Amino acid sequence: MTSPITPATTSGTINLAVPESALAIGAHPDDIEFGAGGTLAKWAAAGCRITMVIVTDGSKGSWDPNQDQNELIATRSAELQAAADALGAASTVQLGYVDGELEYSMELRGRICREVRVHQPEVVLSHDPWMRYQLHPDHRATGFAATDGVVAARDHLFFPEQDLPPHRPSAILLWRADEDNHWEDIAGHSNTKVEALLCHSSQGTTTMGGDVTDVEHAEVFAQRMREWAERAGRDVGLDQAEAFHRLTP
Image (tube, rainbow, N blue to C red):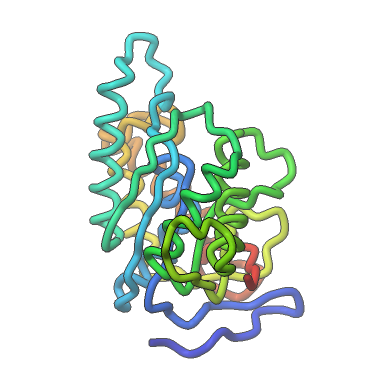
C-alpha cells in the first residue's frame, strides 16, 4: 500500500509499509491512542484492518472519591468504542482484567497468544515493558504479555488446546520505548489521534490536564499532543511522528 520501510538514521528506520492488519494491545482504554493513535489512524485510512485489545477494565481511572466503579467501567468501555471508531479501527476486544491489579501469568500470555492467532496481524503494537522507570505495573505486565504472546503464537507447541494455527507477525512496535529505533510519520493524522483521545473525557483530570469537555482545556491538550509529535519527529526529519522500538519476531 505504501513504499517499503526506509532508512531514517544509522540507528533506525521510518515507516513500515502499511500492513493489511494490525493488533494493538493496551493496558487501559486510552493507552493505545496515546502510544500509537496517529500510526493506527494513518494505517486505517489506507485500508489496514485494526484490532484494539484492552487488557484491563479501566476501573481505577478516576480521582473522584465518590466515583462508582461499575459506572466508570461502563463509561470507559463506551469511550473506548468511540475512540476506536474515530481512529477507524475494525474491532475492539476487552479482556476485562481488574485495573491496577494485573499480574503477568501464563494465563494472560495465553489470552494474548489467542488474539494474535485469531486476528493474524502483520504488526503487533504495545507497551515497551523494558522502559526504565516504568511505574505502572499494568503497563509492564501488558508489554511482557504482548511480546511473549507473540512468541507463543508463532510456535504451534505453545497452547495447543487453542486449536488455532500458529501465526508470526512481521514486526512488533513498542511505544514509549526505552530506546527508539523506528518512527512513523503521522503528519495529517495527528488531529485524528487527538480526536480519539478526547473521546476519553472521563480521563481529563487524570491524564489530560483538565476537563477536556471544556474547549479551552481541550485545545491546550491538543497543542501538547502536537508538540509531542513534533519532538518525536525532529531528529529524523519529520514534521510529526510517533516513535517506537521495532522488533522482528
